Length: 266
Image 1 (spheres, rainbow, N blue to C red):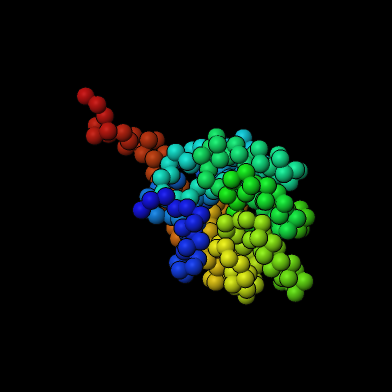
Image 2 (cartoon, helix red, strand yellow):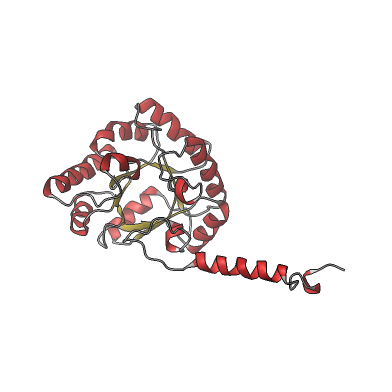
């Protein structure tokens, strides 16, 4: 099928073809998702919670992102590989943002980076794009700003907040992003934003009118119980299945039922 590119995503929006994106944090999962035909693999800083056990995404370091992005890259042949820029790796100054994003591209094999924030980071995005680094934007609920937002809350519910998000989307589009994640905003607002910008929008808790959808792989597989947002659909409950398999293994070993001669060498 060939590698998905930013220009292909633009064409998909124009043609009305929905875009699919899931997170991946390791080689094996990336290989499975890539072979299944996913359009975009996101090495999200959500790995801090689902892989490393942090309370939120804020403690994730650039070195941790590089480590996981390298693994995902080794398992990816067709999907566009996007890596999150972790907290404080791009907010301080544009030169540092370019240096850090460049490491994700050069050392980890990512084809693009994702940054959170609105018009206030437009100049940083311009600097990244000028350095030939494709950038995916992210507005609405931005997990790196949860302390400022007062927790995980739906954004853009009043007219003033909605207008700011609409303006942010337009500013980021003009700054050069190739796609825009819309997280936890009313679906009517997401529909308006999607129709107002040229770049594809990818929703997560933003309704059905976005150009694409993204979820965390651990959420759709039932592997992460600590947070269960309304927008998540569980396609499988692998967590309970894994516990069941482990329980069977423990019982069979303790009762002398495993291994049998079938699993033994002569």
